[in-house]
Length: 160
Picture 1 (cartoon, rainbow, N blue to C red):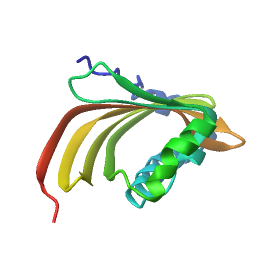
Picture 2: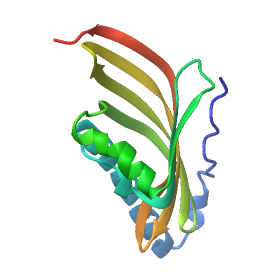
Picture 3: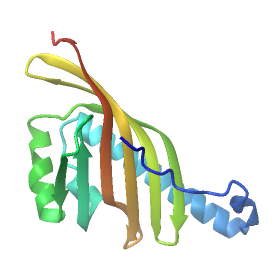
Picture 4: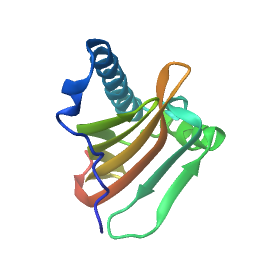
């Protein structure tokens, strides 16, 4: 399975910015990191995440070794799909190694995910990548697309 591209970012581009531009990018970068953490915390604690997406947002997931993609598209569909988190948390995603590239009020990120979950008396560990796109709406960064590709998924042990 081909790996998704990493958002390009010239490491020297930051040095060409004015102080005001640097501060704005740092603030935007921190808001996106907070959005990623909030998504993970809500999933872990069984809360919905639909309000973290734009109204036309999309979430997809691809399991390891499969070409099948589960897709949820649009605000209402996301709300319905993620409302089940309130009764059946999807697990504990740990999002890390985030690389973000900005283009005005749009941004892309590539981040890694370790997911620990339990279902049907079994514990699972999975990992892979998110390829995210964000849009700033009314001054707030939101996911416009969140594409999860699991590269590995393993049963770990019987849940206690």
